[in-house]
Length: 298
Image: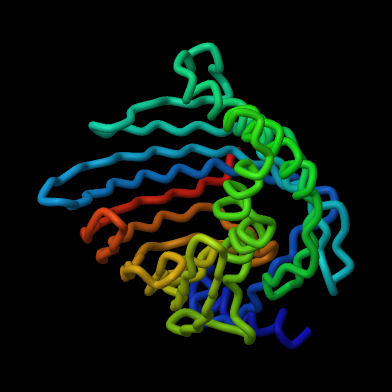
């Protein structure tokens, strides 16, 4: 009741704005609501190895849908579905385009394998239980995706199930998927905030292939008509398994958050990362630039 009075007074004094009102930001979508998002990630890589330079470009587009099954204030149960996936790559070594909306355009053996792998994900439902602060309580549905992956990779590797399992455990594990959800949802402060307030969180992840750390800083720039504009700065670092090299970088941008539901309305983040690596063939360096946008579909 007190918070409502404060909000009404602020609205009156500041001509309809909530510039100084404190708000509680948390994951709070209503039961029965559906949200569809389009994520576009554009990454450019420059690699130097053995005295030679090579540029690689990757463009990834993903459409997802989230259906809220239950919200009892203590936890929120959602069904998460990948609806569309597309990836385009251009480099001197390998160029391809894989798009689940246009499968017939994939003509090479590599592209056909890629479509089969995307089909293992698209249409599958993941049941995720999210806490109000964005932490993931439980995560189910990975086994069906893994089984489908194993069949495709076993065939692609000459009916070698051991090779297929090695590829999955090095690149596409349940922990890796859960970590991607944590990065998306774990964005909320542990206190009420107002414009100018800042909060931090850290995320770490390790797999058979690599380890990574991300330190995020969020700052509210404004709150207008129920939408919080938030500045985001992230410091990132990653190492391949065995510690043979390291990448360090920074990502900056903004996101708009619905104050009532805690749902992202849109975000745009740009980043750079540089580092060195070593392999049996020698040592090299790498520089990445990326831009990622997330848009709530109307």
